[in-house]
Amino acid sequence: MKREYQVTESELFDFFNDKLSVEEEKEILEWKEACDENRELFDVMRKENLILKEVVRAQLIKGDYSSIQGRIIPRRHRAFKLKYWGVAAAIVVGVISSVSLWQYSSMDNNKEISHVGAPARAAILELSGGERHYLGGSEIEFKEQDGTQLAVSEGKVVYDKKAGEDVEREKEVLVFNKITVPRGAGLYRILLSDGSVIWLNSDSRLEYPEKFALGERRVRISGEAFFDVARDTMRPFVVETALQSVSVLGTKFNVSAYPSEPVLTTLASGKVKVIPVSGMDSVVLLPGEQSVLSVHADNLSVRQVKINDVVSWKDGIINIENMGLREILKVVSRAYDVDFDTELLPVDDIILRGSISSDESLGVFLAVLSKVADVKFKMKTDGKIEVQKIN
Image (tube, rainbow, N blue to C red; front, side, top):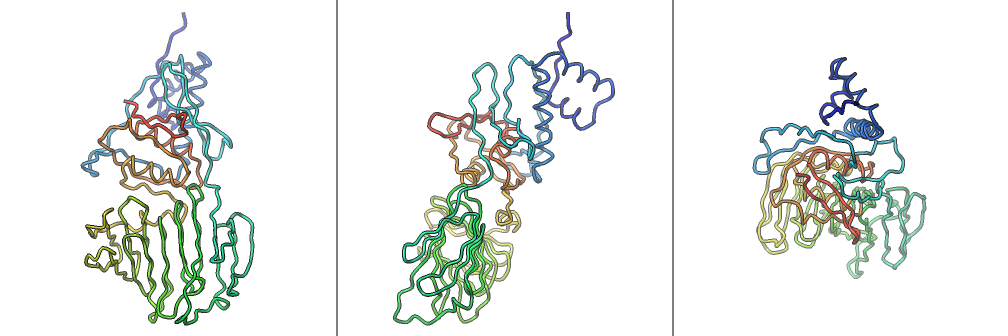
């Protein structure tokens, strides 16, 4: 009678990382050849090991919600009895071009989550006259109604500075263009006629005038944007959101103003003034500070943050430093245009930290999350992805 080996997840990872003795490696290889199910699992775990090596700084550490500085919890040893196997992490970065994400399961039928690749949807530029342009991969050039030259290439909108020189508009009403970046569309960069640069994140909208007024430069945003404002002491740059405005002369800062969420203003350099529309006292931020305006605009506080953790999205990195699982899933929803059902998650959240390239597929992201947060994902009939704790 053939011996039935039991191999733990930890032992397999040690095998792939050359941490076992020669005798232990031999036993693993014998176990692998014992049956097709074992070979399938061996291959799945090998690919999962590659994920953990390939994903950008994806060394996510699970901690306690009440104390981020809590002790690191060691990986649980799960023994595999291989009569049936479906694993969420069966995806390899850059190796499998079209894959599916499978949930952890026992004897239930696995439900497949279709592979969602890196963001591919296009942003929309809507001019003041109603003309709409989809900002895809092609390069186009055109003029606005006032003659301003505009060039669009992949992920970038550039206004011609000479053609778009600002003029005084004492009797004219400013007309606004709008750029909308839908969920799953990645990020876009806009170079305005005054030399200021704006990065727009997924699920965000920017409204700006064809030409700035003489006395100020004013734009409106919903969602998240990073601003690198060209200095002009005669014309402050004002960013409006639904709950506040930010006034600067020349600086770098990030504003996150998604609906039904606190408004976060983070200063990278220079100085900004945050002015709540509710009439509360304004605050002046210094580099490294972040203001937090509550959802109901009735509380404004300031805290210290790590700038790179906040603004890494504009460089194509999805950062989840010290974020709860539900908060992370909101980020994933915007980046990949998917919806999650978290009703089955426990009330007590966990804190994760790490980052991943926004070029990676949804499958890679969820594979890593399932591994470090002990959750499984299942596609529901309504199109949402259900999230459950494994234990």
